[in-house]
Each structure stands twice: as structure tokens, then as C-alpha cells.
Image (cartoon, rainbow, N blue to C red; front, side, top):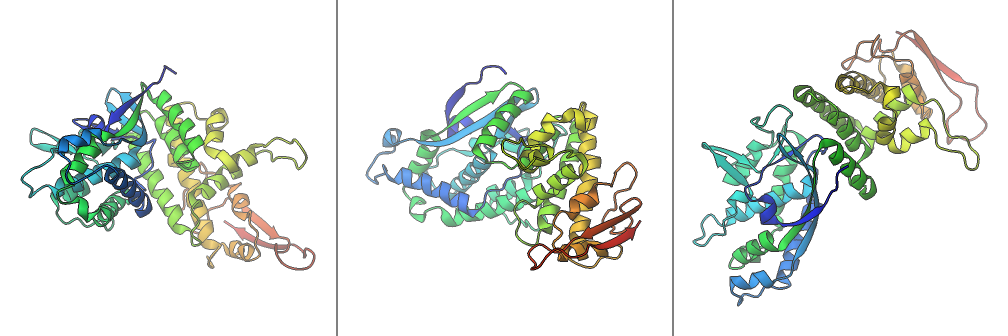
Amino acid sequence: MKRVEGVTRSVRELLEKKKYAIDFYQRDYKWGTKEVDELITDLTERFLDDYQPAHPRTQVEKYGHYFLGSVILSSKDSGTFIVDGQQRLTTLTLLLVHLHNLQVDRDVKVPIGNLIYSEKFGNKSFNIRVQMGLDDTTQDERYPVMNALFNETTFDASGQPESVQNIAARYGDILELFPKDLSGDALPYFIDWLTENVHLVEITASNDEDAYSIFETMNDRGLRLTPTDMLKGYLLANITDPKQRATANTLWRNRIQELNRSSQDDNKEADADAIKTWLRSQYAQHIRERKVAAKPQDFDKIGTEFHRWVKDNDDTLGLQHSDDFRRFIERDFDFYTQQYLTLQKAARELVPGLEHVLYNARHRFTQQFMLLLAPSNPTTVPTPSGSSSGWLPGTSTFCSRGASGTSGPSTTPRCSTTSS
């Protein structure tokens, strides 16, 4: 890795006349009301520590500074990509849109439009966009909502991707949370302070490999991203064809959302549970022995850091070339997570052909999903596309020996057989 240095930038220096794309290292925009509230509170309270109505605007230069964290960027031939920091930068852009709109009818305006968007040959493009993996001219999914917010027009976010819905919702939070007493005479002072006295550290890597290494190190230690996010970043970063990468990204995102929606107990790790079950069912050869100083094995490592286990076992998984990574998502991930969803449904309600799954679930046979997935193979069995029968080859028998949590000794094994 080449030497990496951080450079302190003001908000204006970081955003003015700049273009950033969000690549597949990053998860969707996920900030909630809590994070927006904390950001607005921190910024406005720090500003009000120094602001006095009698001050001339030039006095703002002497106000205290505020550090907003770091931003990791990757410089590529196709542009500059945000590797880490898009949650803050997207929210900061939404705040700037609100501040811009507050000035529309004012005689004295602080120019901040070029921190939000640029215009070329009559086409407007926002300074932060999602790179869809096709080319630089592709309109990203956020454009309609950002354009509506900037122009203060109505936008229906229902049925839109999660990021789009969150952007619309968080802008609504900003409208409600931004202090009304800063919307009057203090507004130009606050805008000056935000753009000139609020700083971030810009860290730029010269290639994807270095960017991913920085991304993984900082997020492993900071725990800001989940193993699912980091596995997605690793896999997609190794698919070189932009169109294939875009297709794989869409499949991944839709399936992760489906897995999380399928959880009925507010399990925030539903997607991770599915991936761990898949990887353990197919690749875990050993489990840690129950003795002092025993080392964790495949089963244990997949359970705690499956993103790193995949990266460390690329030979075992056959991940050597771009097509291998594409296949791993489009065939293996798609197949096993769909089977997992089918099993999950069968564990909650009676599904013809999978009655044994419900029986075992009611007797608290907690590891049955992994055992059921173990004999399945996407190269010989078509993905069921929601079908609940005929998804396992041959005949499988599953037994539950008593239910955990029940009184008394283990009972005689109860078995259920299904034929595909």
C-alpha cells in the first residue's frame, strides 16, 4: 500500500465544485432520526456557543471549529468514490439543501448551490451520486428525490428503494429539527460557520485494493459496518465488468432487504444469520474442541467474522477471477438464501412437503436449517423461486431428540421424512 495521508478540509473545500460517486463498498443510506438529531444538535449548539446577534458576519471567522470525522476516498479513472463517510456527507448535503431553500426569498444570500449540485449543458447533477456500475452519465436512483427536495416539489417515496425513502424521511427530520431561531437573522452566520469552520479529514487511496484495505481496517475496528456490508464490498469489488457488478449488486440488495423483512422477531442480524447458515452448511469442516486453548475452526470463524473467512478462503471457495465472484453472488448466494427463506416460512407455518420443518421448529431443533441446506446444490437443483417443495435432492430424514427447555430426560428421537 502506498503512503496514505489525511488532509483537513472545510465543508466548502470538500464539496464545492466536486463530484463524488458512491461505489459498492458502501451500504445504502441508512441514517435514522436519531443520527440526524444528534448531528443537528451538535452543529447548532457549537455554533451558538459563539454567536451573538451584535456580531458582524466577519466575526464568524473567529468562531470555534468543529470536527465532523474522516472521509475515505478512492481515486479512479472514472472519478472519485466515497469509500467511507457517505452517511455523514449525504446528511450534510440534505442540510445544505434545506439551508439553500431557506434563503430563496431573502435579499442577502450565502451562495451554497455549488456545494450541492453542478450544471453542464443544461443538465443538473448533484455532487454526490450513486454509481450504478454502468457509466458516468447514468442517472442514479437518488436524483429524483434530491431534485424534488431541492426544488421544493412533492415526491412520493412509497415503493422506492430504501435509500430513497430514507433520504426523503431524513429531510423531513431536518425540516422539523433545525432550530427556528437560526432561520432568521442568524441564518447567514450559521451558513458561513458550517461551510468554513466545520472540517473533515480527507483520506484518499489511489486504487480499489488500498481503498478496501483502509475501509476494512477502519470499519472492523470502529464496528460501523456489519459483516454483511463488508462481504458485499469485497465480492462486488472483485467483479470487474460494470454491468455484471450492477446486476449482482441489485440482486444482493433486494435479497438482503427480503431477508430482513422476513424476520418476525425484530432480528437485526437476519441477513447475517442466513449467510452464516449457508456458509456453514457448505464449507464448515471442523468446530472448535471444548478444551482449554483450543483454536476456533471454520464453524466458529464463519459465526463471528464470515466476511473475513470468505476472503481468507478464496481458494476453497473457487474465488479467483471476476466470473467466480459473480457466480458466488448470482448462483450460490441467490440459491441458498432463497432456500433459507423457504425454510424460514416452513418453520412458521404449515407448508406442503415441508411439514417436518414446522415440527422440528416447534420442538426447538435450532440447527435444522443448516442441516437441511447441507445436501442441496445449486448446480443440480433449480432455484425454487418461492416454491416450497421439490427443493432438496433425494430423500432427507430429520430427527429431533427432545426439545431444549423441556423438563425430563431426552425422549425417543422423533423423525420426519420428505421425498423430493
